[in-house]
Length: 536
Image 1 (tube, rainbow, N blue to C red):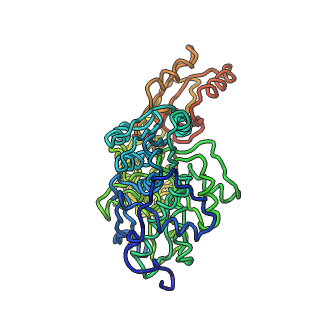
Image 2: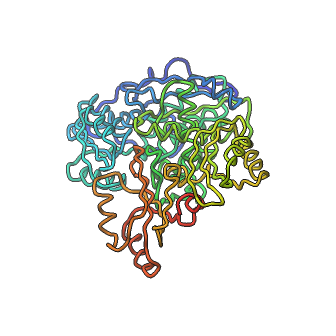
Image 3: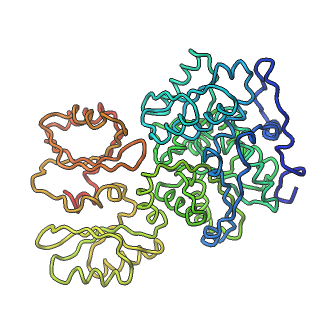
């Protein structure tokens, strides 16, 4: 083993595994309590009956841009386009014949479902997958195509999980947990084993997407024991950071809500065993936003011509954020590209937001005088920068508000452009981080009307299922008028809606009850500057 780690012993580890008998009841193994016990589990993990040893590839463009040697662990090249089949198969292949005959059951909205279905087909075992009714059809069809029975129930993973547990008890099926199981963790840990063997010269840090914690727990169990100088860094979305909060609190924290863009890691609470391991072995957790994830998807595409799903690109987004914040150069860094089950209809959204994630597009609101030549003056200040979007609507006789997108190379150029506009007495606001402006207002500029008295503006998340809008309308009072409505499907589990509702002030209390009883997430945007400039 080198000074910073490498895999022990010669030859592929898979040759060390031996068939496990299933002739005599369940294989009951005590849950491991030490890192050494997890090393034994990972060494004996049976994953290569279904999984492949994925390559560790250099990413030349990312390496040049960050000033580091960036390596991608290509788990998106697995037969189910995700690492999940490793843990699922390692768990299921150890079940006794009687348990396999009765069948297994799992709750999942995507990659774990496909891993369980493939493992069941390999083992000749019936499989039932409980999925939320909001699961995109492409994922349901992929599971059915592998021979599993699909049960659709509930609007969330939690509801599907509860139903799967109920069916497991009723039908005496074995529940295959997506992350909080020692055999599942050990199966995922084989990724860490491969990484150290594939790059024995030494690795400075490994970046891992975190949902329930199974992947990072398994990778850390191997890497931190054999190469303790290698940092293991988790990456979570800013709106689904259950592991970061749990590590900070010293106990498992349950999130009230989770963002669903990176649906593969949209977990309200991490596992008990995964948290125990991560508390001891994970060095830190980095948070990234949706725009950074979209930019990472584009980065990986440019290096590999492969398209990762949001959760699959999470590690790359975290690597970029970590190196930029710490100004790290000359290191060897690994990002686990853990999945590529991307819905095609999401690509439009990813393309729109990728430039913002790289800070290569600035979204600005600029106020210009309503007189001949003012637009030319504005364009002269912008100079040779490419204008990516321009929306204008006559506001009044004195001034006009312009919604504009401008290509930039970094945030410094955005600040310089804002300063130049203000020097020329053209007030400007940077809307690049304004969610309402990026999702909705850019498509609605010019929607002013003097008739929308008492208008209030709200952003909602509607479940993507039939009847969601009808429920919204049925709960509204008949004398409240919808004065604005904008919706766009981005292939996620929730639709994003912007609605203007005319509500007299005397109905404040009743309107508050309506919002509470509706049960949908919402944000009051009535004071948002983008609304006041372009729509109010």
